[in-house]
Length: 332
Image (cartoon, rainbow, N blue to C red):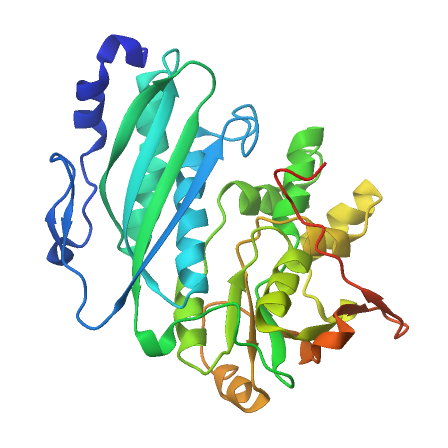
């Protein structure tokens, strides 16, 4: 059935089922003019929003409705994680072309509900409208953080280590495989595509890093080069990052060889990994590295004086400026 036959209010009744996973901090959810929420005492409220536009952020020929729903929430939870916070609620606004089926919309929300259930996040409201062109999804996520653990981009200091979670470049490589239609040719391509269409935000790691004395943090949405430069600029410092220390998965290395590319390029400029890059004093890192964060930590460099800029050091020891050439909507 097409959604234009079902109607707006019947559609809302259909999708609002199973949207509250933590009832203790919700007085009113979906159904009234606004949600009524109970904040944690003595915590800061975090709010972030991301918009996904068809044929700009996603292509329905290469991603399923469920995957798109999951990812639309994941990218917002990653922002909360980068602030050291715990996500609590989301509000979802969606502009739907009338030709989409009800099954598509139900599957979209099933993906959203799945990741919300995983992280104990409530869906407490939003808006549903028609779109004359493509599909548009806007998610606003809320979270909470102890003020003492709040993470910014602006706290890095000279002598801190530069550290990342997980492996980098998988998502950017997965996207290229999808765009070229080559992802089914080799078995090792499947994990890369999965990491692009259903990225997992590092919520647990972000909170533990923030509790361990980190001085700045950023999520890797636009590529490591861009995010490292953002921290350096906000903190008025430089960085020295070692290319051979940047963690690459076996899959991205194999795929890069098959495509005639350099896996490091995906890590630096591919984006949408939704891992974390952070700075931390060496003594604090030695303690953090012993904890179980559910993901691997890799030291990739150190913070240096601002006058040096952000440098990439190759395997031969040669240094070059690491330009922030990640994704930019308005770059020519």
